[in-house]
Length: 473
Image (tube, rainbow, N blue to C red):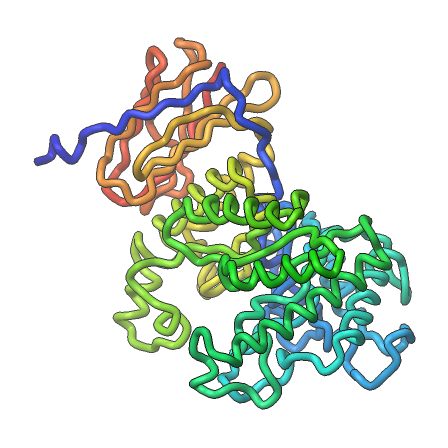
């Protein structure tokens, strides 16, 4: 029985064949620094994960009592003149974005719109469908002007990416009709959902045309950060843009998954879809993604007080941010690097909690070490090399300056403890060092065998694990 479990999986990598560049944009974050209640260690941890961009959605929620990012915080009194800079409140957002850029070293991806509102089907204050689409478009234009053109004592930061809204399919919490909705209207394929979609498509085209008319190719405008890769929404949006004679610079969507290849498959579908409408330069952006396990659901994670259920969600190797989640993240990132995806944003890298990188006692989750490792790869290596993976194994061979070569090996839920990789393009007498991330180790040195072009790795247990191997020549 033991011998059966320890049978090795044979895989190959070839450092003599280049696949493409390592793209830092794939390794971006759904959160950044906060205004208050953040220690120097928090900021150092955010920087250590090596993200390229930070997306501003939900930042009003992780900066309690601060009026940041959302359009109604920036322009709080809707009856006032949108052309008068005195009617805007940019200060808190200025401070937060400056911290993000200068202290954390992150580029800004600005979500235009509102944070989510989990207040039920009937009670909404900020996410209601706007009365005047043209006025909201003017507020958005003023926001771009402030941060890129110096308007209203602003900046010339050249923020490139501007996203129209977030998860508009959420007619209960993001694009809500006045007065809310009923249980019947909340059901899939309801007439109210179709009505809300048509309203949003009109809003999207209005904002897109307005921003491109003033700022042209100096910025990239798109969205709408769908809850998932939903073709009915994307078809309606892309069709309306084509009919209006305006091209989105990107489409965006979200995904909470347990199959690390799903994002790459969605990107391939997105490429075909955009091309079919003539938008061949339209970028593909996954700007919320995270592991979501098989042993819990959304309701349990957000509202459960049962200690046994909490333990199932938050403790052990298969937990929401445990080693299985960490290996999912590494496998997903490696696969997206080789996909049609343009950018990807891990949700969330707030500082504590369900979507953070540590718990309330400041203990780092396994997923923190996975993200830090991939940040080191992005920073230290520039070229992806050829590989053949199979089953639960993902291989990600990379090389950098002066012939440096390294290999990320991720086993996401595999049953075998032994992993064998045939390596081409590395000197037969080269040495190899290895860092191990598993349920018990946080990028700790581990033994590795590399002889005559054959790399052998052994997992300490039967859970998910990742190895980062560096070759000496």
